[in-house]
Image (cartoon, rainbow, N blue to C red; front, side):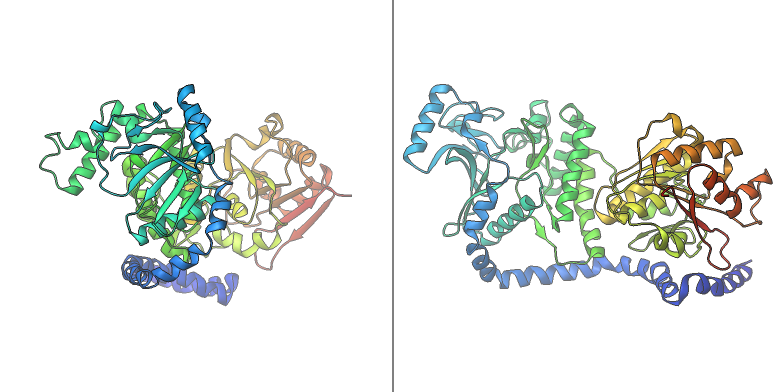
Length: 552
């Protein structure tokens, strides 16, 4: 049996070369046989690379410091475009607010609160909205950098004193600047003191997730842990894990799944900007008061990997994702979990996939060299003959596992609706969407409608720039097929169909062969609102493409 399988593979080589061409065939060998093994070596390479980069950065630290020092005015100016909180919105007592305003008029910066180790405030102007206030006697001195709440030009900021740590100072400065420009929910830079290594960024008004969990009984605050016997004999890692478990125990009393999804999207935006946060914990997440959106703080441990290649970045992102999954009981995909699912673990069968898929990073499902469906079909015929897709709204009839829809989105489509009746393929398609979002580190606007194609006229989906039906429309009866084409002519100007002349495919109804032919398809199009039909039929290819338009 083994020899027979090897013989079949050898006989397939000429077919693969003929249909894919020499250049693409070599690429297929690389992504199927070489790249998966290289991905196994990436963690070793990255470990060495990161050590070299850390040494290099320390060596060039003064040069980097000088560069950012020269951009001080630009940093502050651009910071004005981000999140900023006026002192009037702190919720201070009116009398205290008037005192603060008068004091602010006399001096550019006014200290009005200090932040302790657990995020509690000692306020010099009374209670502050959404902030836990304590007395001087209860203040727990910070183990790390000193934090003060200050008023600058009528706005509220947090001044962070890095106590001479130039590396942490520059790390957070660069992260806040770059992530702010990328539209991430992070504090904006208000002032930079290069002489004393102090950075002032905007105060985010809202509840810290850690404090909200602690209010409900989770043992998370440092002051609570120090006197708790359950933590007494634990080492640092064990204490960290127990804290996470404490938070997860009542996590969804504080946040909901929508917030968690929104938070994960913020991490995706950070990753898309070339940064890793590294320091994911409940104390670094604020639920902003007005919007309810998650804001992230404390970036002195962040990493800037904008110069790394995409494969390396994917592997590095997984460190943040794994910590996110741990803290929020989530199952966001990582390279490791994707490989496990593709191999069939967790009852996720990969043996019944109609359309073979190549995701990138050496991750694939099925024979991607087969040009009849999936990745092979897209490379062989579809991408060459589809119209420009940028900004287009598209309807995919018989979307199957959504591979074609995902490719169109990767090529610039704005929105795609996939019509699919089989729940098995919908499950596969949702997984495929998640994997492509992990690979490309972006969100794709695709959604399924579980329905029969012939019911589309009653669904009121609106107009589309393009409608496609790849090897799917001919399964309808003649009347339904004609009615559907006629309706489609009223919602789009371009309709692309794929026929199927392969007689080796078994069909219960022999008439299906006729409906799958080019002649029948073109006739049905011409009779139902698409007078123009261009046939693309490469020699020897059994699945011709028909591009129909209703422009006269």
